Length: 273
Picture 1 (tube, rainbow, N blue to C red):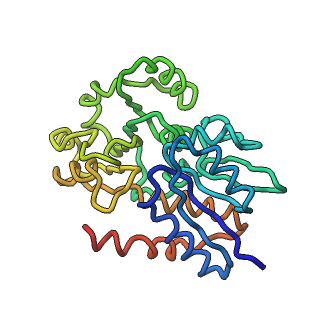
Picture 2 (cartoon, rainbow, N blue to C red):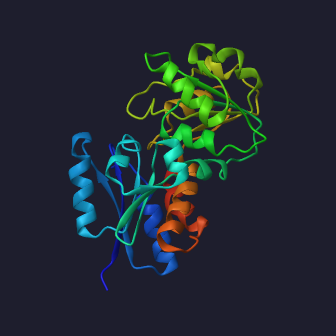
Picture 3 (cartoon, helix red, strand yellow):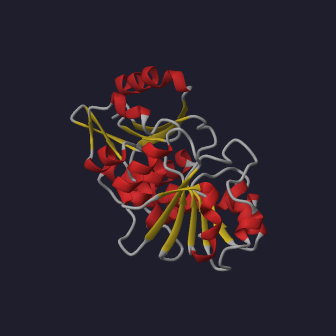
């Protein structure tokens, strides 16, 4: 029997730790499968998607910037993915491609501590997933930069989370009260810019949790700015493991070994810091 193939569609994608994580989990579970990262130019998504499906790929993850665009090519969406208008996991059942989102559940299950007052920066696919799956005990404060689409985004945030969308310039008055601050934008992925400064992190509680949903070889600018203020900050690796475990379960019907997935990607990260 041929090796079952899975993969990741994204741009950039070469930096992704998903292949190491999933391949370690497949090996531990005794599943003959291979997971690869496919770096897809933005104008080549349709052709790449069709080629992968034709080649027999059994499922894949989707990352920036394709979480919304991929929906055009899928046969169906789960209710959550339809509500979010974003997909990060594609399952193929009976020849049909079904889009789902495991980002939100993957995020909340991997926090160090439960949170009550949460600042969420961004309104993209991952941010929407975090909003839609937030525990009822959480009070969300969502921020985004002003743009022509701000009213449209504000309506979406209200629909998903029942809260107001704030201008990022207003974040200062909320910083002292937050016990979790999340960067759910891609700011810092391909630059040295942090969406919040070290000076702003000094305004937060000393024990605030700080999470950047992106990750890089070195600490992201957001994480670095928080740590420079003495705050505990984590990049997106924990969320990667959480959402990846849920994707693995959907594809295979088996629960992966979370520790194996973690060990496959964390040791190198710890050595780089």
